[in-house]
Length: 300
Length: 133
Image (cartoon, rainbow over all chains, first blue to last red; front, side):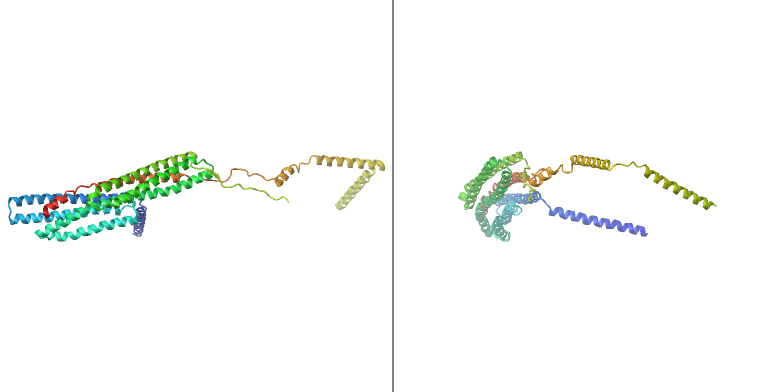
């Protein structure tokens, strides 16, 4: 009996220790999530939000079809019942339209909120603007659900007016996101330049001929400077978006500057690849004498 | 009786010893003073020759020159100099990071393109006008 109790205690202790150990390992695993894993998690969340938007769009399309059907029926037989059916269908359609607009904005907000690739200040500015729209739309829903026949028309007019501005705002916001995204990339690459320069100086001090490396670094920097110019131009175009009249053209031009900035960064990357190859040729490790010791003594 | 015999034998041995010593002393060749001096000179000469020979073969200070050289001249460092190595792996890592960032940027631009090009609600205006009018 005593032996059995002893063994039982040992087993329980062992299990408890294992559980604690696995718990600690698990926690440390979570906290040690790599940047790649975080990016993938953010992407998964965005895809989920996007899917919710697409589901809402399907409901909106169904509601639209129901409204058309109700109108057709009312045209065929204009009775109270059919009129009420049209009003119900109209309310439902408006509600689904507003929900779709909200989900669309939430998808964009989700894209921005979970990414590390936009600076925090720019992120907060964009999210604040999106939240303003979401709040406005959410405030419309109670009024829509209880609107009278005339009220439905008023609500529809308001939402229609909002929709004109919404399209402009969404394009401008997406443009801002594109600009913020390339700015993040560009800032990061610009910080590489100093490190590469330092390494070239080290090789030079070690007696290596670094003239080719220096030329490549100069080209690397000039490409980044051009990318920076394109980014500034894109930012200006997107900030200028304010009306339906010029939104398409301004967005297209801004986007083109973003594409050009990206191309210049890729060219800079190509130079960096060559710099790395040449450094490898010189040898990843270069012996640098750190100083000779001497044993001179006085004979006086 | 026995004691007496031992005593007698002891005395006899003593007498024999003393006699032998006396005989030996008396058998020494008598050397003349001149011969004595000459012998001493020869012995002394031999001794000197031996000493000189030892001196000529002395190797105790054979490395003196080297020792003096070590003191008077600076000696260059022997062996390989201390070195430190310049690593360039960090630059390779930057290049890899940039490649990854560019790939990620392309994906993000595609996502944003989808958002910007979304036409799901494009006919909303027409639909709403049907309700509001």
